[in-house]
Length: 484
Image 1 (tube, rainbow, N blue to C red):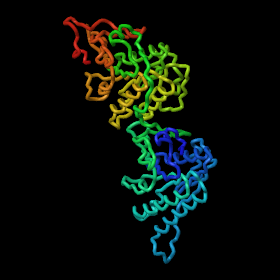
Image 2: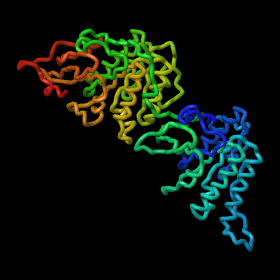
Image 3: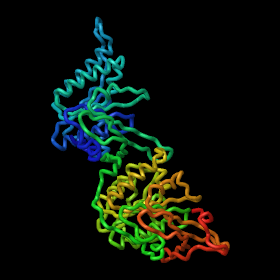
Image 4: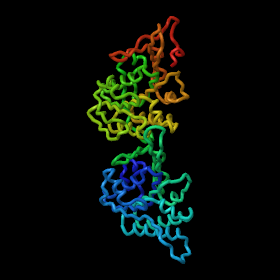
């Protein structure tokens, strides 16, 4: 049964199992009510009868929530059943909580049965838990409610607040499926939301954590990337930089599916080299995506970008999912704000351009800022390895720009990314006659031979110029002098 969130349905390998009881749990603010409303609205669109049974919020509050998203609740029945304790019978042998909980469970089942709804949301189970005297009592009543609801034939979503740090699994063990939502505050920038499917009894799903985002009018889920699930027929796409002397140094063109890391300190020309490849790709008729974490759009446009005929980028921050792509253009510039984006959303952005627009070259500038996006996870290498594997499987070239001021140290991030890339280009400063100069060399190329010389590098108004081998009066300048 479709949830109304296509990417969540993809994680669930089709959707929720019909006529089963499912749980969406999370702390307040994770978006449980929004998920529930979206599920019912999708049902109403498809002609299913839908019931929202509220144990905590009033109907006008729910309608206001939907209105804030621009959603219509036509076709969705809202029933308030906020539990109000009754006076127990004077001679009752049951505790007040016993009779209240049993009565509430019976009223819920009868209300769902009377509505004849095919889709039901019950919000929230915390109201039922508060009436239970202990975990065993709560579990027995949940099982009783599950059996009664299962016999009705509805597909039910139970919403539950996680209001304590205690590990209580009574509700999880009693239902057929569980989706857990998480809200993570970061030290700076937007909070991160992610979800994972705990279980789906009798069904299949994609395990792991998946980032999601709630915008006005929609919920966006970004399924985690599994590279081996994506394949594209190999194609012979080779890109020369367009600078003959540099191509000689590199040993030829970039090949399809390869990954290249451009290393060097700030200002040495890493971005210029990446843009040189982008320009060459566009001129060769290949679409290119440039994800810029660092420089402003104005700065980039003042360089080589103006010559590429890029698509519309005025609203193209990667934290905005409404940016329109003009199919008539071959260069897609995406300004990424690292404080407002999650790792899953960024990878999803890359995937959409590769799969929907047939992009053949992806540039990430820079890996230092991308590392800030996933700093809390300490998983730069696994994520980048999965991304590089995906791009390789899709016959897409990748260029990653990384800034560092010391010698290359593969035991530390971001230099460690160089281990999993196919090629490494190192750019450095050196001093001669009290003048700061630039140099470039190729440290690694897995798919062919390359020159081992350290060559002079000059950035001119016409682009990149590669000069002669770097030398001084004492002979060749070694690697140790260039700190490469």
